Image (cartoon, rainbow over all chains, first blue to last red; front, side, top):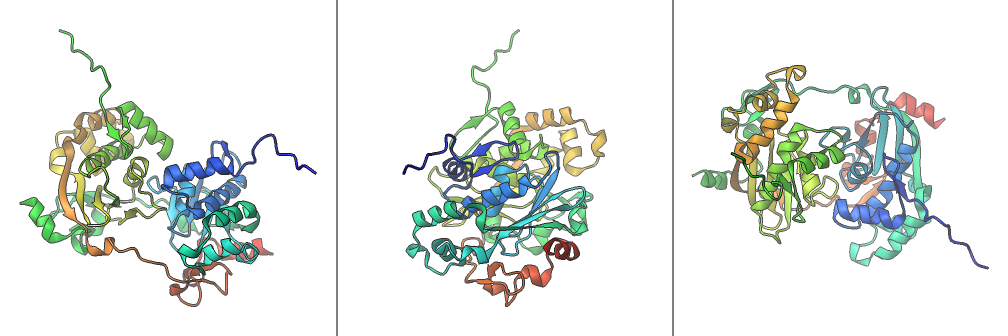
Length: 211
Length: 211
């Protein structure tokens, strides 16, 4: 018996414009933006797509990402929410979950990995819980299982975010720091936070470079 | 007298592949990724390009961005460094500056706005220091001045980042939180940080949604 192939390749994820991507196209998108085929993003793009499917078409939404690893890139690839425009907020709780909500009302959904549903996908489970060293993981099998599992391992619930996420906080007045001579938000105090709490670069070499 | 037009339009910025973009193409890129023509990104893409020009072609580099506003998107648009792959790190000091460095040696450059050089570009200065309410700012003039100023308002110095930025920190073992049943880094303690410090959504409505 021959199982007929679908005429159109099946959809793995979609972006906020409504463009749809097959599994292979999704992996291409991931490599282009993220630099390599991160398994977390292969899952992540389905999570973002599932969340967007719950939003009315004209909803202006924001996203809170509960991890800093991988998942923020799935959000930036498929939605208008980026870390630089502030519509993506990262609250790094170490959980592979995202909250997408109407930025006016705060109502939306939280999408997460349902760990109970994950148990039947052994390699996926090993990777997610890091119970096998990376060099012992079977990458092809992992991707195959992520593809096989699809959205079946996701959990979702309706939420309303706390009011603090609805208020846009202004940085207030801008001043010139008397030490580094750069512009900074005055509410940091009379010198900027970089000069007060330590710059990222080596001070000794910074002084050398200034000579 | 006729001023001849250049045969090739002048370059405003370039990405890590070496693709070059005119001013207009840069604004298109910005709108596509960031959602609107953010003046901070029009400046930001030149800052990123200047930094990349200091790196040897085969350097594996990371970036630290000293603000969360706008500039991280210029980095994500033009370099392989994203917030999700961890090669872009945000340390939100409120300064419009970026540090790009060899991820093995820590050597690199810091690019910032030289506020002394900004003084002659009045509208650019008003926008940067927020000394005019947004509705009184002349957006077209602002963009014109950003374009006119080009890289002349940028400052740069050689740096070496602190050792903490060279070490990749592992999240360690992963566990299942006994309260939310989701996976989390065990070093957070015996329940996950979300359950301990408060989830982003309204607990009352979360309970309702679970019924």
